[in-house]
Length: 278
Image (tube, rainbow, N blue to C red):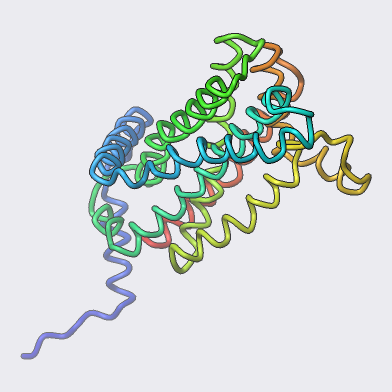
């Protein structure tokens, strides 16, 4: 008697029974598995040093370029422009760096890497959160290099080391939270190129239409109104308050609140969209 191929519906039901039979993953297991995935991502970065090119070159290039092009026009000289510009470059660099999270996720999904995780009894969020934890290193390097370049050019933050460290930490937290949005884009886009295009279309207008490079008072009224409510402007102002004055202002609170909202929205969306591919 010939073998009968099971209908697709029965195959789906069998897969669901297998998934239901998997042991439930505790919070401790989730954290452990996330760190394992983070270690995997770090080893991948070590084997692909080109992933650090944007992190290492962009801060140096943008800092020098914007300082010498706009310094005299906006502040009269480069030295006077640095306290305004360096925190803005830190925010811009970290936020643009986090765009790579969604792009690399989409590339891994296209290569079938995430298909290997289907049979593993691991938390569904671990393959997503692990690389993002590893990316914290990239954000920290980008922000640190920006401040280092500023110091070389004559920037002397009045907030001292504590203020600078707090500014870097805030920028890193913000970049990590926004990376969840790009992770979601990575799970729904059809290609890595599409993820990069969508991310740039969203982030670059928000970054440049902010107070990162020019004072709000110099802008037209309609544009100034948008800049004041732009979340990137809140991050830039908070970074300036910390680095230049060691001041934990209300802008820091608004920035952290925005981070929490972004994570609360896009982390579940990312996991749900990712499950569809599993």
